[in-house]
Length: 579
Image (cartoon, rainbow, N blue to C red; front, top):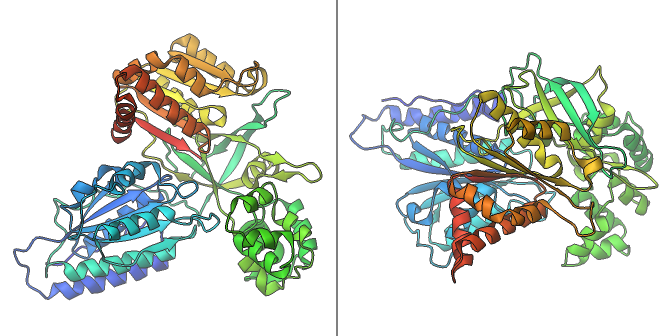
């Protein structure tokens, strides 16, 4: 029996990578073709993914397709669908995970990590495994989630099927190589003549757009208006991007990635500071083009910081770099961009051949979509806060000011969709939903409300929204009040922190309505959180546990409340889109 070789044409690999991987799998399959098929069942691999933005889920699907093509059945699940106990029944395990924030597990891996890191976790001597980590070397805890899972599985006695691979933001080549290595190792253990068992094969890969990081769609920016009122300390804007003939099909809860271009004013200042002309060739392009389209020039890279410290070993930066405690360095770097560091270290004198290594690749920025395709099928709406700070020289956010200032009416912005299957409204329109989204965190909930209105969903809707001042920061106020007047919004609880002496936040309003919020949860409500991950999301989580503990009562209420909230997470009734 021959195996069907299938590499998705919409996989996150180039044509050359797909061709190479397909040829590799064909070689594996041909090794089995000449062996008569026997009664042996196919080997099955469990593929678990931890993903905040969906990349790891897509890679898990691609791995499963490649494995099946080599005669290995695959079972794909999110990490929180597994437990250490279920792994005792698994012979082969592949984990693909991103790292979230400062070395944290992505949301759908958190419960699995809590369980497997427990001192009472079962031994896993019969398990063979490999880990692929996705991360960003711009962060200190690069691929920390993958490293921790890899180390813990080894501690529990599991044996590596293939070495762990840690991928930077441009992960495609390394991911393709890891897939081929792991599939080869699995294929060697598969019964001769086996093909993927239909009952155990991975579900079909979801349809994917042809537009991606390497091939963004040029979308016209057809609306750009300020939402913030006069006197606001913020500049929040509403954007609409035309989908045209892209074929992009989005859903409420998805994110849109935007590929920015760097600020020409900053580029001119950098060219002057670097001492090289705009037409100087570097990495196969003119230096000015590389600075505008290819390199991250706002945030200093670790390589640049290290090179500047090395060139000035007696300087302040070198002293901070040498310290084991990273906090003083982070505090010193806060608010400074690449130009600031070059100006503070004017004796750098970098040669042209050194420049490429000093800048990281320019990356897309992802924003929660603030529209539903049922209300806006031809345009995607975004709600974005423009980042600007500094007195002597204004420092602007790379993408937020690109959209605000540098995409004119006759120009386009490169975009691609980032589906978020984990952040979806309940399939049952009768299920109540609780939405917590201060500031720009209201974006996906504007989409949710449009969706509920368009589908005629009868479930109750409760929104917690807040910001600094009601008069200037209540974005989409008319829309939200209209939804409340129409009965679409069952409850609208507002928290404007600076309108009174005592600061009031969304978690304050949650606690005030704790009994009602718990009653909604008991009636099956789904709870969603969107916005700042550093403080707000953690404060909301703490408030939720406190509310549940107060309603449950009893001597062991803290433990019971934590487990109650974990059960909500397992049931996908408490999900977050935080950044």
